[in-house]
Length: 505
Image (cartoon, rainbow, N blue to C red; front, side, top):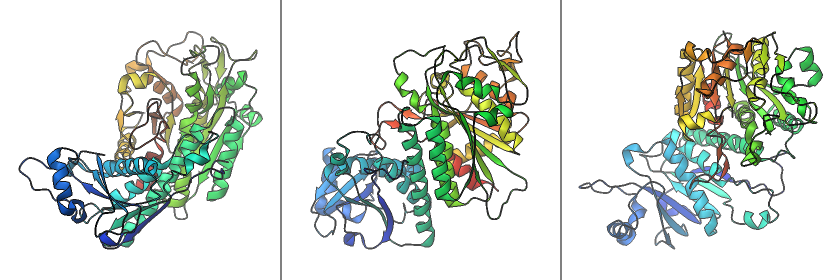
């Protein structure tokens, strides 16, 4: 549904080893770093042809600051048509995060200049496995655009870069493997972004289930899709209540990966993703300003599906099942009302004080179902609260847990994956904000600590299973693009889900 579009642009990613002067490409990019006062530059050999870079540094036109570029056409002695200097910032701070963004920034800037083939030279000090993996990811992330529904997309696609190569002095099997992993992860992140980018009239809960079926079939994964009747028989009144106002039926999707040789004892990882394909807020209706963005309210669901696509190919040693509750939160004569009381799977009653706090209602039943199916560790990702953006801005995922060891393990994986994550408190005092005189628990607390009380609500259904909640509401969408990534969906949490699985022992 999303990978076979007529206008879909596929970039070929590869790695090669050859002398830098023999690299044939429309553009050859080399990293140049900032030079501290009193230090001698250690720039790659081709960068300073006839004193070019020295002159650029002296004039201030190029200093090596991060993402800065300078272009020389028809460089003497090189097979490449253009020599591109790209700033790497301070050499001691260059990491896979910067490698990923540099690659994305190069792709985004050069495709507008008619470049069809791009090579990034990494010398022996930079050609580490992690940087090569990150560069492959970054190139694919930079190539993606949110414009597939524009009528003139064919004209725009002429600006695409067809091939991206990482060039190194010496090719080793582990470097080839790193590049392949980066390609798989980058493609998974873009699959997630494709899903999130779809408008709600084209991506209903049923269409999301179809996309999950297609992906599972392509990757050899097992899939189960529960419909309204099956969920009703299981007592999922919390999830089904949210769907009451929509003509589109709800589903609970389960995608299962089984390793050939499982490790980690009886571990069963569960990845749960919120899948609200459009959120009006229900009768607690949202303001009209910005409501069009609420197609992104299934970014958690898309993230776990993207992660499962990559996991099927990378084959970590731990069994993983993705659980995706998917609904529309709409308004009609049968819509859920503030003050309604619903019964979740397992029997806990919930007073629905605000129908716009619907994500936690569908996640409650999905988390309970994951436990019912044998999950020993649960991570959920959800565009859950606006409050997380107030607390952390747009730079960090918010993390909440009932098990510090498990959370530490996940945050270590997010750091490896290059996705900033910050743990927020879950002190018992915050639970006191969730009180109802009429049901076991309300679906919102008071004005304060909104992200924490939302997490506490989910914890009521996760306990005692080790669980981490990732609130991605402020990080799953960019209102303005960056030099390395377009406006729109970011694919956040995909890399962290993948890395956690790969790190599991």
